[in-house]
Image (cartoon, rainbow, N blue to C red; front, side, top):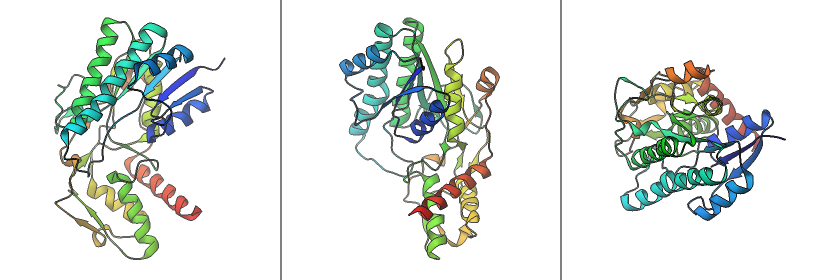
Length: 305
């Protein structure tokens, strides 16, 4: 019988990539999206876990906005974020406790649980979030740690730094740059407005990061793991390489707008030594190659239109 993996948030970038990976190694996939069930409803989650008894559960669901969006209603943002990152997480961990104690749970967290720092961040770095997203993700991590310690649930946490692919939503700065460069190359004119070009980001390749998720759940004991490259690159570097792929000089097509928010203004760089040591994981491609892969995929997508 095929092992069952439940992917919560299977329609996002990471969910799609993880689904592809697990299918390639003969897993049976149960996909959970907003349209298939309400994960904040404990009855629905209990029924799901009781019925499927999955070997692995990947909690990738997130309520977030891109780094360049401004949501002024903090109360609404807090409510939605807590519902997904905390309440839904409790629902799944509680259901595991009562209905499927052998299930292994992976919680996808974010580097935004840390304060900005020029120093490498480890799993022992103080949790000090400065955004609603980071605060709610921190709370979700603490829920996982509680169930791990008090209820003996296999609950591991991945603290993911920025990771990109051609499946990234177009409102994220990485994909926004790629899409704009391809459009300008095709049309022969145009420009792109960005925020701080000198913002430093630890950027990785999303397929590598979902591979890390699977490796983490293969370990004998659950733990917290940073998933990152340990390198930082500026938005300027990203733009230069992306536009350069299409034979363009980014300086002629990228304009800065100080009114555009850039969450990556403040540096966060992750030290993935624990992950590398315990699982043998390492990034498979470089920053430059990642951008090339994204640009190639964008070109192929345009050609298919």
